Image (cartoon, rainbow, N blue to C red; front, side):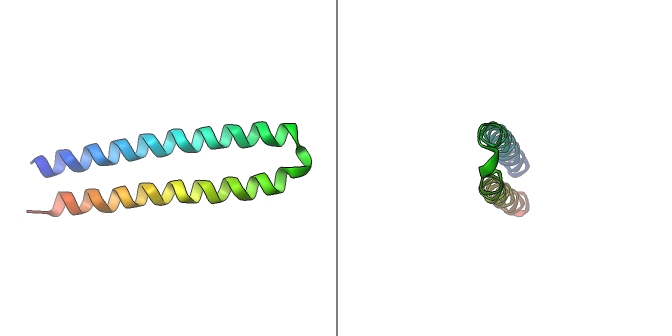
Length: 72
C-alpha cells in the first residue's frame, strides 16, 4: 500500500514541477521573441531542447514510480 502512495507522490511532484518549468520557459521564450524577433528561431530551438529535457525528467519519474508500485 505504501508503495502506491510513494509512487503517486513522486508522479505528482514530477508533473507539477515539469508543468511549472515548461510554462515558465515558454513565457520567457515568448518575452524574448517579442523583444528580439530576429532571434526567434534560435530561441525556439533552445526552448524545444529545454522542453524535451523537462519531459525526460517526467519520464524518469514515471519509471521510478512504476518500479515503486511493482516492488514487493
